[in-house]
Image 1 (cartoon, helix red, strand yellow):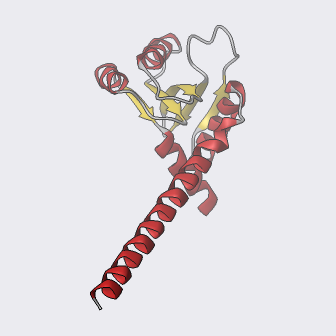
Image 2 (cartoon, one colour):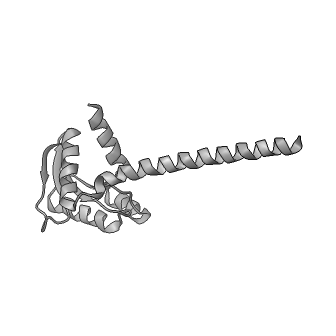
Amino acid sequence: MDKVLSAQVIAAIVIVLFLALAAVWIFIRKQRKKTDAFEDMEGHEFEFFCADLLRDRGFVEVEVTRGSGDYGIDILAEKDGVTYAIQCKRYGTPVGVKAIQEAYAGRDYYDRMVGAVMTNQYFTSPAVEAAGKLKILLWDGGYLEEMMAEGRQK
């Protein structure tokens, strides 16, 4: 009787472990699909994608800057009387301090009120610290996903 009971317990544990692994695998696949949406985009294509997202969110006078000589700024925009200079980064790894510095310099060059970095990824800790000191907005992959979801709901 004890052998039958212990075999049933072992079988139950194996089933629970299998279900847990399946759930983790499904979660990872869903997360990968979210970032894969940007994987095939080139940098300039990502900039136009971000510009469209901003328009959908009520930004006006949204302009994608020319590729070279843009002083690190990819999009100029305005919302509610506030002007923005935005650096876009489509990366496969977290975004570092250099993008923050570019947004800071570009904000001043274009004489804009707010500088921001928009990415499909996340930011390194030093980048977050620099953005706080330089007063640069950080719009990471999670925020981009929220913007996309809001657009789909409209």
